Length: 324
View 1 (cartoon, one colour):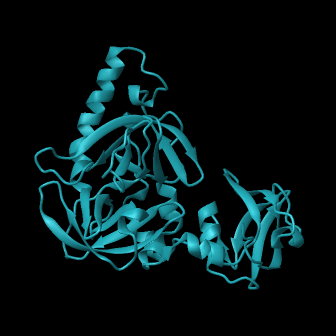
View 2: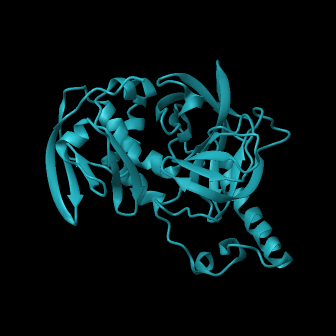
């Protein structure tokens, strides 16, 4: 769903070329540090990156709560968690690390992934962080989270936590970079200083910290920028296809067509790869879910898929989601 409006942003900073230093076999690229020198190298790397990214981390404030976020464009586009913005077109404010407060307005988001977006409404040239390219975060990667736990505190400043990526599946990334209340919406960076995810949910367990991968934002960029909000209620009421899917390097692959569903009746089978719906390219499960939720039961869709390396298409009449 990300098209022309994302193209300039991509060309500007989404695909930074890694230097020879970044590609070298540094301690932060190793699975396990081998000695104290490796740990010191990781520490030095973190300390060199922090001044470059901290200026883009903001505290988000509204009448009904607060959270964190990160500016990712020069004109003040901010990524955060959907539960931080709550709804679209809501007046909010952001505070920079120096304490200065500026007006903002919530744009769109998804309750399914917890991805949210807002925009600073005051004109200006804002400090911003780079987004990582799709698929750049892998298991075991070193990362660090920034945020404002407990709300903005100028004297304390932004809180930094270091960890590793220990899970990265579908719409959720898991790390052992500890999160606290108020961190929601803040950025998770890789050791190249790129945003790989946004903080979403916390747990009492130190290794159960959950984040929205940057891919969830990129796949629905125009949807969010156009102040559209995807809710779980929309998913319940929208058209139902009846597929269980998983994301693979080949695309969104069918695991199962639910018995009696529109998908089963159409002849879709396990291992089919969903390519597009009504001409809209499908890159991940959330994108497919949002698109189907925008349709009504009984609407007909044209679904293009790949089976055994060959592209095929079907016209499918959507059904109603089963009620439990």
